[in-house]
Length: 151
Image (cartoon, rainbow, N blue to C red; front, side):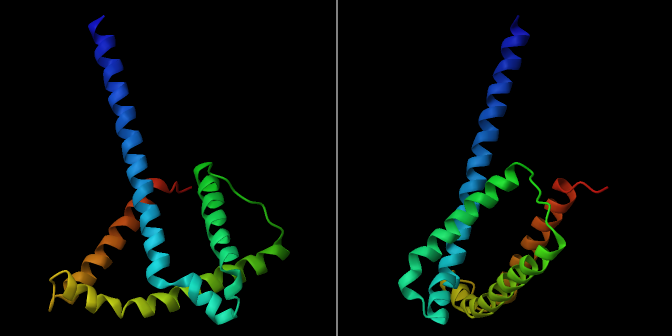
C-alpha cells in the first residue's frame, strides 16, 4: 500500500517537473525569438525596404501566425506531401529567408563589441564569441543525437 503512494507521488513530481521544464523552455525560446526579431529589426527593415510601412501590422500578424502554426505542426510531428512543382517556390522562399537572416546577422555582429563592454568583458571578445560558438555546437549536437531518429 505504501509503495503505491510513493510511486504516485513520484509520478506527480515527474509530471510537475516535465510541465515546469516545458514551460521554461517555451518561455526561453519565445523570449529569444522576440529578442532576435527586435535586435535584428527584421520587420521594420522589411517595411523600409519594400516601402510598405503602412502594412506593418500585416507583417506582425504574419510572423505571429507562422510561429504558432509551425509550432503546432512541429509538436504533432507533421509532414507535408508537396508536388514537385511546388518545391521551387518553397525553396525560393526558404532561400530568401535564410539570405535575409544572414544579412541581418552580419549587422548584429557589430553589436558584440558593445555588448562585451557593457557586461564587463572588455578585451575578452574572443571568449564571448567562443562561448556563442560552443553553445550553438552543443545545442545542435544534442538535438541531432537525441531527437533525430536515423534510419
